Image (cartoon, rainbow, N blue to C red; front, side, top):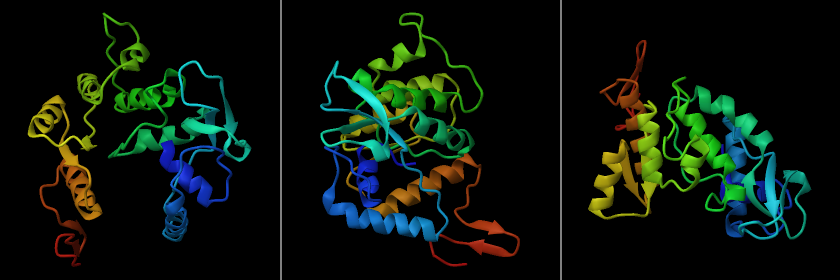
Length: 231
């Protein structure tokens, strides 16, 4: 699933009008190629079907939800809608590894943060374990309102979530790396990064989560060695 501002470029590549939403015009051609490759390889590339729009990204602004084909001139897509969330819930529940890179909307603004909060809540419940409530602040929603990424990781771990977590960030000091790992992350990667390294680290996390020490994958008489790129 691709949400947030990144989804705007892909929606634009599919021919949708996105109003004044943040987009990367120079990557529309690349987005078209990505969509084409996903279709050819049978990859289920999920994009928003509805979004929360407003004229400006600020507190208290009037906002409403529309289908992606109904975005008007002057509108900014600032969060995903409830129909989109319903569509990705089964994917999140069945996923063995989740790589979460960024929020689904402008989560710093309450009006556009609900989807990101719901996603975090859903991830904590994936193992059918209850989410602990904060005695000081009450509900989980309130707990997430001003929670940092590290606080979220600590809370998910305390709730019993064992899904591997990779921190992908521009924060590069050794102290920040130590703090992230001690919070409960399984790996820490600093931007910018080569795609090959990112993929290798994700493979390693998935392998360890499944209890496999060997990087080679074996099925019957066939063994795949991703390091040597040999079968």
